[in-house]
Length: 107
Image (cartoon, rainbow, N blue to C red; front, top):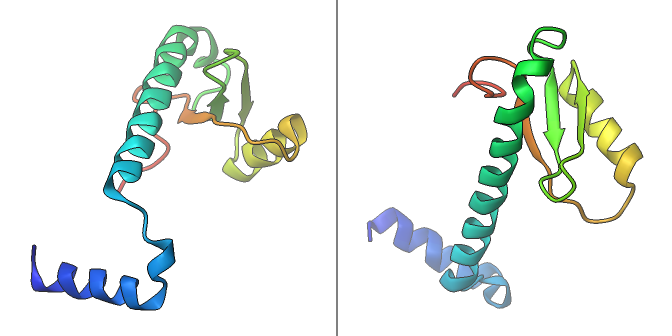
């Protein structure tokens, strides 16, 4: 562990020691996100060919459980549609972009 990461860990534990998330919980959450992404990507790959021509570069949010999806040309538009569709209930969607790679941006 580097000095910087040790300092960050010490700082977090001083600020709010009761809010430290155990590594097992962090690993569980990461595995859950990965599983959700893979299920969403499978659906995306299946429906992309029929949507890409008309909705090129639009955002698509996919519910892997129901296989329902929402599309909008803008990110804020897709967020608004998700709120309208699902309201306040907790929902896990995967968001892609209708293009050759499916990515929403670049780093």
